[in-house]
Image (cartoon, rainbow, N blue to C red; front, top):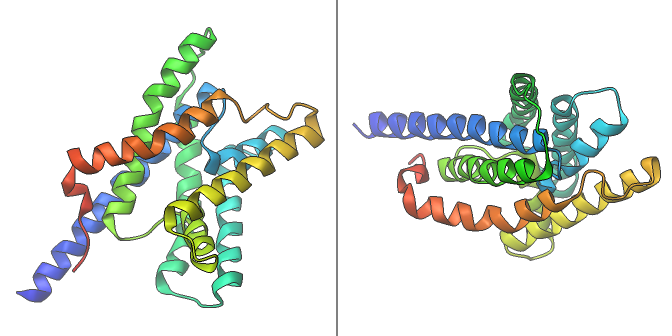
Length: 216
């Protein structure tokens, strides 16, 4: 009986995780499509896509792999969950490109873009909540933020903030050096995402407690 309960809990955890991954990828793809700035964690891949003949999804996968390698250097230990993040990086990149490929619509003006971004924000926030609540895996970017916090004796929230600030700064510098426009990919949308994601995750935590499924 105990083994059956453990198996069922694990299956629920994986289901919540995969559902969250799809929802989050869709929300991030929508934010990218709006093109008025993306969430801090996506800034580097999005900025690189403006400079290189590669898709956002491919560059996102590459960035996630880089985050994993940095984690390995910082922790000097290999775990099963860390290894599972490698294929996860490619799956996430594939989902981004898949959803972006479906979004062929055009946006006529700034007002529509802001409205669509505000709609995208709770979508990817819900995905993040599901992923974290599943207790199964986290994305490499979040894993690196967590590791940075641990190394600097910071709580996870401040480790995440530090990671976001560094990622955003790198994106700004990339655009300034190669295009002369520092805020080509960091814009009002980045601010909206940075401010709004946390509150939405908190809201969904209260509204959908079942997303807190964890294997026992």
